[in-house]
Image (spheres, rainbow, N blue to C red):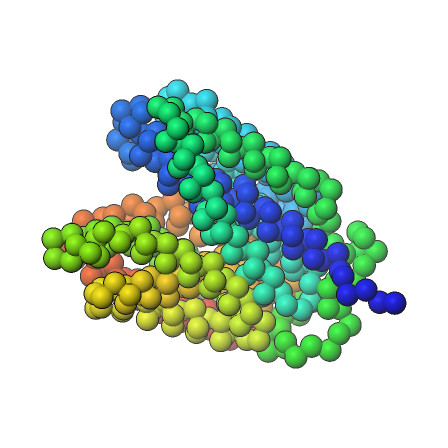
Length: 412
């Protein structure tokens, strides 16, 4: 009898673990360390958080290398190597006694995290599935946020356990990343279904998920990088990454009402949590929508983000309106890691997907290194938070134009 179980489900489980452990622990939980570590060493917060910019820069540098290796080598080697570097980087942070040490650890984590956060899910899901690709990508990516929800409270409790509790938290995070992830990357992951003597999930089935479906073949990276569509998607990736970073300032926006609406200021943490919930749910929803139509996914994601900005800007009170706005903004936040890879797949196909997406992701990684500084300058300018929202709406308009232009070029 034919079994309903497909090995692709284990690949999805492996991707969920990669997102929930090393990626979430290194990225989604980074913020809980900024204040305690900088205060412990008596340095400005910016001096310590520079390590996070270095992490993003080294992710950008390593992405084409990681993409090339992942397209040629066994995925187990690349992803296990990335996990080891990420875990050792976290453990190294627990041993830090000077800022340069943290910067070196940030560089190590950047090399390790690059193939995990940017390439593992889109590459493996693209290889193993020909249907429900969007849903599986969105589901897996949602666990970067879910991992943050799980481990931020645990890390905070460890940090508060003693004067150097941050060392304990970093050490625990590093061990969890290694012990929890390596069994999957070493023993479960396979690069392609053929490695297990299988066909991809959904192969040979008649599916109604055909709108904007990507061809199994596609454009070589050397050809793709010379096309206008490639540059359009690169701009989309950079600008949507810039836009998502507004999330980091939503708590500060709520706090800015301390004098006029103290109840809003007191709920600043809830506002950030609402956006994180929107991100997690949005990734799954956008994945499902993209299985029907990539264009519809773009419109829904950007529409939700624009509505969220307008609600937060013009209706910060009552609190429920601000929370709804933050939740809707979380959906456009989700587009960064869901819509970008699906857009690349839809335009350029699957043949050389990993190398193309790796180069597109370099733009997003570079933007991640400078976006927080950019928005800080915007907020501190005379325009303040209203200017931030105006620029956010402009970012979403640019993303709409560039993504639709790229899709229009796909047939050519």
